[in-house]
Length: 420
Image (cartoon, rainbow, N blue to C red; front, top):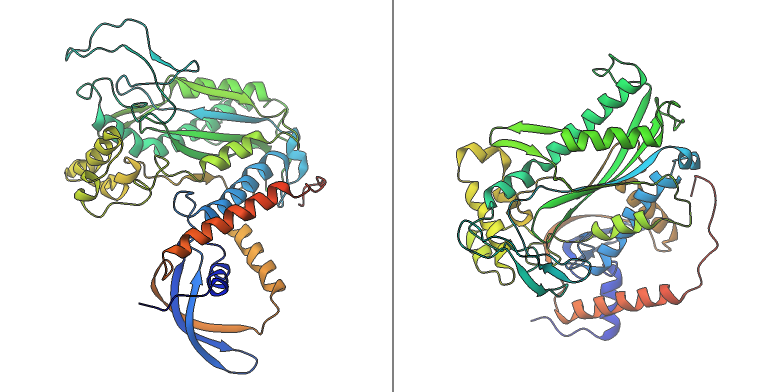
């Protein structure tokens, strides 16, 4: 057992890891490139996990980067000119279809108070309870036997492909608005987007999408005058209602409920959409650690406490992976995400900057701030986490203090222009 560290040593170790709660431990040689001196010592680096339940500090940084990605595409910044504020911009939320009646929490707190005929299994489809927001029943089926667990998993698995094909169809329809007959070769405009996936309480993924119309080419020019916000809105609504894809396991389509709102009225002082999407970018599948990482064995799932519905979704994904017709869906690796295989945040190349660019800029800034001698070295992975588990509590407390200090600090005056 390693000797207990002094408070100053603990803080130094946390600072070295960038405030991370679960850093990666490396071991190797540091070489001072000025003096040639060689030192052997461990190195702690941040885990960079986006999920707040895993690491509050790294998640906070990821959330800030996600906010920049979204806002730059809406109002300019990070290489995107402020003139995009004048382009048609929409905020779209896409949901999954129903796979069975579930407990819900309406705006007034009620669930399903109206009388309903029983299901084929004799279970009541009425619920007069008023569920608390944290009630595990919310999202769970009123009848487990009626709920189509297999269909839900397969829909999640194909949702990203459905989005890609939907986007392709939207572009084709817009091309027809410009010049009938050119749907197979859309040109004259560019439709950019940023999409964030979020899991509903019932375990089905839904997508929040920001879309922006630009002119053709590399520059962020205005789109053709024929492609207005109204035209874009009508095209998207029609495609979402009508479009579906055929897979080897059936037809995949969007749910009947979708939301489409005009984001063109947003200004620099109203970026609620950016904050909204950034918040969901740091959630795990169910908001807990249970489904934060992939499972290594079926017993990892069966031993979980909490929602039996979510546990059954994960088990269904795990078991479906054994069937040859679903082999290409890689369901076992994505059982913790209930079959969903897509990235949490995806965007088109021209929407705004990249996470990679933001991290590179931050690394360059930190290198300029360094006052020590330049160092190089070769390192190998040694493990995860601090030697003393109490250091995790200290790291999270220091992160909380940092957030409180930022909240009480005076806000700087907003800047203008597209090169922030």
